[in-house]
Length: 114
Length: 220
Image (tube, rainbow over all chains, first blue to last red; front, side, top):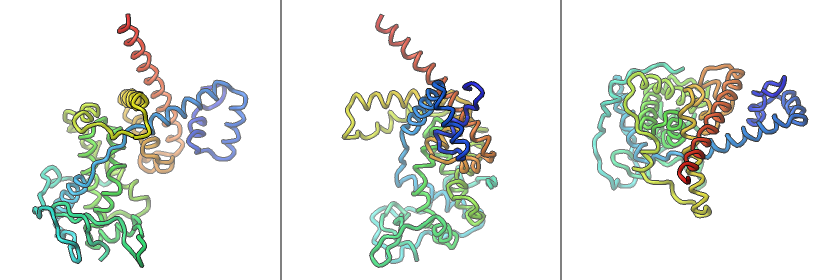
């Protein structure tokens, strides 16, 4: 903590998550505190480092796998899930494999998340 | 009928991400997709999966430190979301709701934790990121080295610090969204995020010192 100043305001400052009054307070502090300016620079650098972490792209095969598991899981809950309609769709070029239930998800216990 | 698939992948006809009206492509918002899925248009949920899978898996990978675990948790979260879709009240964004399901799934999974594959190991098997044409080889190496150091520093943080940093910096959630996902007051989000950043900085500094000492020793 820079002297008598809550440093967490500096984090919120680099995140642009301050009220106008807090922002003014921070800017006044930055004008007179070299350590605070240094910390803001370091916080901005950390933000850039984290934002540059590689993204994961799973592709369509993941989507297909999830949808198969989702329909199978719903079916085990007593619903009859219809596969997506293929009306007016072009001929399929891929295999027409039946839905393969993902055993790891067939017996999933749902925890209420909200 | 909103969806008439135009890409064939096995059994599933992956739908387009929007519909065309008078020749103009109109992106469907999450609410429309959810309503369609609830009315039995299963493919509408496929659009939601396709839309959010990369974001969710990227975030989970950096939280878990394992792509394999992240994929499994993301799949489990999507499956649970699909089964419970009619209970989604729309009080928050769909992604926020989905992420909370994923957090619960991750907690449940941790109880029966299995051996993890590290991000680094998996990267070797799936190949490197594509080259950016505008980036020189030495710049790319430096960037990758820095990413490895940051991932290592992240892995040394507590779960709650790693989680909140990833939500903010990788997932680009604002404080309200983070508060909603983690069920915390916004003031706690602010203070925890700051402590997490200070911890990350401390760990990164230590890693840099270690690597400098290693280089010095090698050159002696």
